[in-house]
Image (cartoon, rainbow, N blue to C red):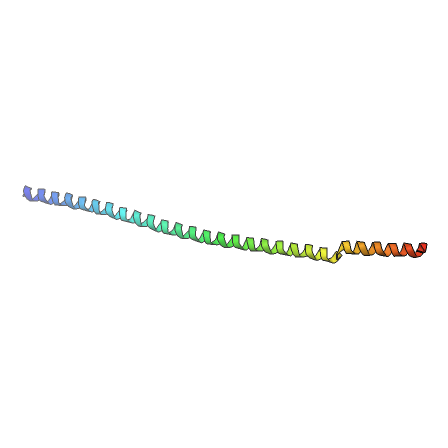
Length: 106
């Protein structure tokens, strides 16, 4: 009878050891799965942030280029509104010379 009780206790101890080992393995698998899923989530977030920042940078650069082009066009229009200043100066000088010649009588 004692032999049977001892075998039962040994079997129980062995079963408890197996359960502890199985629980340890299960926790290890769960921890690895959590780590892997968190890594995948972090990688996905990083990819999304990189894509968003790239798009944002592109739109900022496009807006900057558009603004620079508008400014250049406004400057060109402003300059063109004066016309050719040198030509106007020459015509004004000729006009003044003609008026002076007419007044003096040349």
